Image (spheres, rainbow, N blue to C red):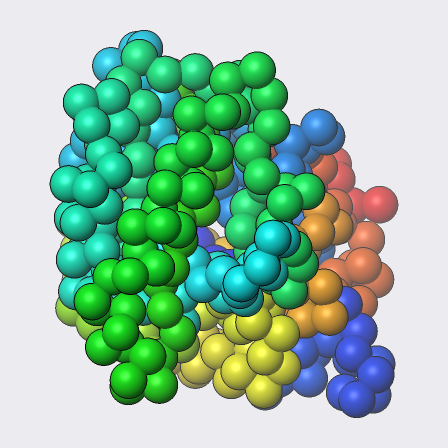
Length: 409
């Protein structure tokens, strides 16, 4: 049997008044996800465990079968793995966003992506930051778009840090890193404002009408985690398809093959079709493929309702539809489609509510066929709840029919 997980990051949402109190997922035209839900099995998955933040790191670890309470140390070390950075046990990795801050004593977080800066321009900023304010203790590494990394050699992780996408439009002072060892990190962030404020490339960006990358924001810190590989636990070969370092880093720790796709960007201009086609090609050799699409989450953080609806429709048309058309050639299969967590348009950040999930099997006896379309309200009506979410993977790859029989409310 072949197994595929199709994950639209942050796709779930809350009802929106101007959509007739439908969510963007319910309002969007999604015939392929609706088919999977109506002809397969629909339910909710609770990916966020208590006392941990509702981030894509925690949620996607759970989807892949890991109890985040046992292995989650922070977002930074997961992204470090994707970037080929080996952390010593005493090292701490931080996610390093290039951001746009306002002016004044308590500058506002205007844009946590610095205008979705290109990887090429961002690499220049990160390289110069390394030369200007970096050291043998603090090392800067360029990533993709606005997402980069700082490694604190022999550092401390007993720090409280706020994700920048949680404070869009707010003054940053109350949200600066806190804790006994936070001062060196706050100092670096302040130095970055001074260094980048006069950077020539920001002058060029302003001349082109682009937002300046005038500061870094450090968060998501942690040490290298300990995780059992999926290949060892489930005795199969799997692959990860994603444009973002976080998911690829999780994939590396999970023992999945990282399957790059030309034109995959982590934004709405990503190569949706290329991801699906890559998965079908990979399934000739692999047993399992995980396809991650970041675009709906980015639109949620931007508060871009039209953009989120289009991202969902593109995901359904070009990813879900292509997989459903192509996978029957391999014989027996199970395909799951889900959101990892909600990113409500009106809140512009993640929440911990369960998200809809649909599983469609080539084996008729594994499908409940309740005729309910894919969406948040339908998933609640279905009577199915996977909680905690990290139970999903072992059952998706195991006796799925028995799991449904035992967990239908």
